Image (cartoon, rainbow, N blue to C red; front, top):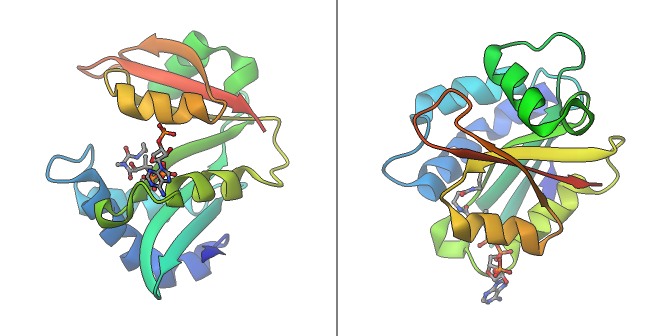
Length: 170
Ligand SMILES: CC(C)(COP(=O)(O)OP(=O)(O)OC[C@H]1O[C@@H](n2cnc3c(N)ncnc32)[C@H](O)[C@@H]1OP(=O)(O)O)[C@@H](O)C(=O)NCCC(=O)NCCS
């Protein structure tokens, strides 16, 4: 079952579930520690166009995906400015940004990730969606390519390892 949790107040009730899935999906060396991810999630939930989907199996939360409308106009940080410059404003500004997405390892490869991705992209008012992942993660890039996502750019985006910006029409 996939449930939509699209407002900040309702999201707070599910934040613990989402952080638990994040910790399991991203393993022992996540990009953000769980507490920093929780803080980012709370901030992101306030963003325009916020949309979150949670997947349950046997009443247990096993997957999540969320996103929101990206900035338009002045970039809110040098990172966003760089993403726009390398991928093209027409792909980034005012489009749907998907920062985080994960399924518990115990429940991967059963189509749950595909269902979450389809669900969050359905009925969006945006023309396009975009996301940033590690460029070296070929398995993940293939996962997105198989689902219609395009490689828009590769750049370090200020970090130590190369990143890939991917996008698709929705
Ligand atoms: C990326 C991620 C969310 C995908 O979740 P998932 O539930 O495993 O996704 P799916 O099951 O829909 O698809 C995964 C693969 O399993 C295959 N698959 C789907 N159903 C299957 C089934 N019943 N049996 C076997 N394989 C299956 C799919 O074909 C897909 O492979 P493909 O890319 O070659 O087509 C998950 O791997 C994850 O959480 N990774 C760690 C965190 C991460 O990297 N998040 C994304 C960046 S923010």
